[in-house]
Image (cartoon, rainbow, N blue to C red; front, side, top):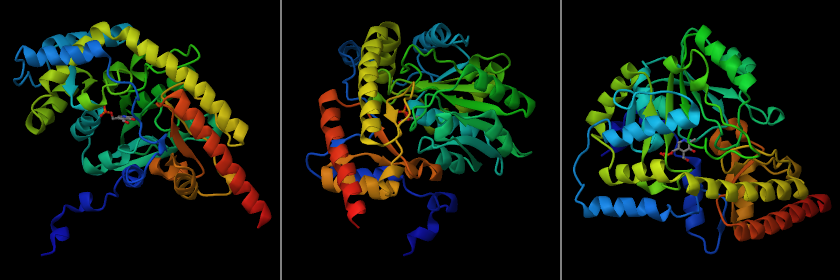
Amino acid sequence: MNLKKHIAHHVRDIPRSGIRDFFEIVQSMKSVISLGIGEPDFNTPWHIREAAIYSLEKGRTGYTSNLGLPRLRESIATYVHANFGIAYDGQTEVLVTVGVSEAIDLALRALVNPGDEVLYHEPCYVSYSPSIVLAHGIPVSIPTFARDNFRLTAAELEKKITGASKVLMMNFPCNPTGATQTREELEKIASLCIRHDLIVLTDEIYSELTYDGAQHLSIAALPGMRERTIFLHGFSKAFAMTGFRIGYACAPAILTEAMMKIHQYGILCASSTAQDAAIEALEQGAPDVENMRREYELRRNFVVSSFNEIGLDCFKPFGSFYVFPSIAATGLTSQEFSYRLLKEKSVAVVPGPAFGASGEGFVRACYATSLDQLKTAMVRIAEFVAETRAASAAA
Ligand SMILES: Cc1ncc(COP(=O)(O)O)c(C=O)c1O
């Protein structure tokens, strides 16, 4: 039986994630230092795990409201107001989701009609383009460049806007580049969005992880933007809660209601245990986030200077826990560099094109791993680059 022909075409034609394929190889190898998967190496802070345990002990194991526990929604509204300066009504404008992943999917499915164009900056998180296709939209990538420290510029955005453009997806601090936006550039982007009546999805998942005193600014906080923005955030990165699978979307009630309908029929509600843990994270977790952030900042400083000393140009990102060095100096493609580094030195980094074609010539290294491991990894990368250069000089 030819089962393949029964698969919906738009699903069949989506490529598998390049990262997943690469990490299947990594997992089959012994003693690899992985700078690959974008996951905190910290355990979820103990008091947050305890809140999950108590939740189970108290028998809080039923469905919650589709929107999420009222207390969690209120805590989210308070947190977003305090940290981002944007006011949402916890009862009607906040939806608790299964990670930011679900929130992205809901937002796109709630907004996109077949044939609508969805703009996103590239290199970007691996799920953006496939999520747009799954929502029957047309992905339109906007390149970002090393020369601009991978900022999205209004000038590049404007080039890609057409009569069919409906949504702009943004993620700053950015996975995979670590890029952040300046207020000036964000204001220009906001004014384009208003002029062209675009809805913005802003994925703020790394917003707590900013460095050098940089103040994160969400586009949703700019004048005229709250009403046209879906603000997506979650607990996976800053609170080290990836496995809890908990996130949220904040937006004007009419948009929240549209997303809630899809969530209600597809998911019903996020896990009650995870929701109780999330309340604890928001209400008591700020010192843990700050401790982890400080540790990431030290690691970032080390990794950026090491890459530059090795001769792989790397800009110093102000956010997230990724660096995106150029590997052009080795003469290898991103794929060759990553596979050979893995095979010859047992260090895993992700080839840049996994985040879109414009990632060619770069690799992503995640520094959410201990400083000791990072030091060993950088020694091995230095050896690999020196050996590669010596071999090409001899050829
Ligand atoms: C930019 C970005 N958005 C969303 C996600 C998914 O987050 P969650 O674990 O909340 O689903 C990730 C995970 O790596 C990410 O990097």
